[in-house]
Image 1 (cartoon, rainbow, N blue to C red):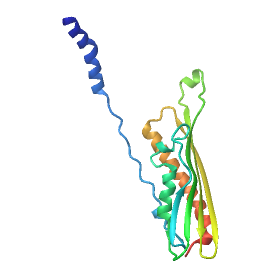
Image 2 (cartoon, rainbow, N blue to C red):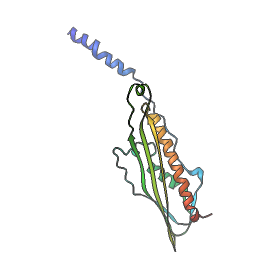
Image 3 (spheres, rainbow, N blue to C red):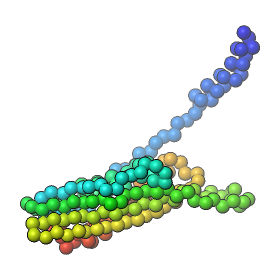
Image 4 (cartoon, rainbow, N blue to C red):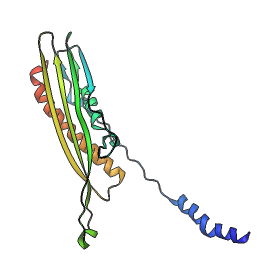
Length: 191
């Protein structure tokens, strides 16, 4: 019986003690993405709909489902915060054709010098493509905006650093999308 107790004390007990010493990684929350500060884009329509044609594959190399604010959700937030129906008839339908984030594994350099340098391990390519279909009582129009952004992440990036980069990348992508959509929508806006 003593040899079993001795094995327990020397092999199993230290494993439990080591597990108890592990420090959990604290998750850093990101700010919430919003566009209300930009003011409303007033449209002479009675109703605004948002339709998502893009279906996230939820598998590699697509990673938008892992983002703190996926591109699809960012466009939906943009529509909620910016588009405002001020008319009595007509509809505006924002069709999200694409809202993706793709992870590209980067080739690492090899050799002695590469062993002592931190390299970029992944590149994230984001894209948004949306069309605002406007239907008035006597006319219709389509307004389209596209935006793309990319950024790379180092091989030593923690999940918190990666989430921060993803958030900032999504925020920059939406700033580009907003600028293009606002410019293209200008002729249809109600003062």
